[in-house]
Image (cartoon, rainbow, N blue to C red):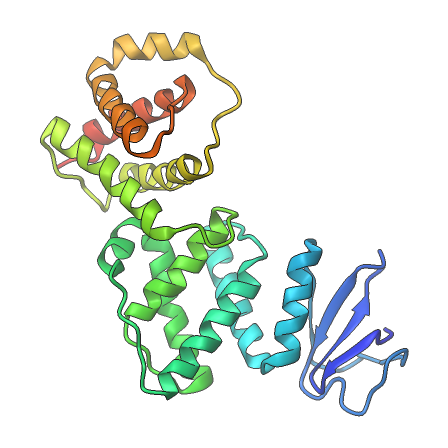
Length: 280
């Protein structure tokens, strides 16, 4: 493998078989090396990072140049843990956003600053998977850096995971959370029920709401509409449809977002399930 550019003693840029830039990282791997020099990686402990998005790749190169490799390796551990345990893929932007965030948080910690998270309780309820990985990330940070954060930081790490899950560069999680809470409140008061938050039905609905809220703020809609099924289920699940109409009115009034028939259809199906299988 040939070095295109040395970033620091522990990282250099090379090219893959397609001619795209990759970052090769390993302790001391580039020490004393120069550009255009061939490197034998046999028996060396190294990792390769590459992003298809060139803009993200450039930002990642900048981070690797400026920060200790431990930060990017920690982010990698967190991402791989989430993707493996929940079988979900995250947008590559998280390699940039989460690495920068963790570095900043650790710097603030050493200055005696820990920032309270005003949405911590909501994050724990609405983004349980992401919060759990955030909590485990705090254990990794403690192990790698000797820093012991309060649980508020787990919520902030969850922010970044949710953003990457939604393929969005730092969408406002407070707004996403607000929409989700509003929809859940409409359902709760319409049917006068409490939710069983441990049920798989509730979990699936929360996942749907997460992406529904994203569509509200990105003004995106489903491309296809199954009008025939919509009108069939509208009659069959008339109580759930009445609840959908309340949600529709709320979203249109507060966010100027018009729910398509397809959007109403999926909400209606989820609401019917949650009110019959996930309430207490």
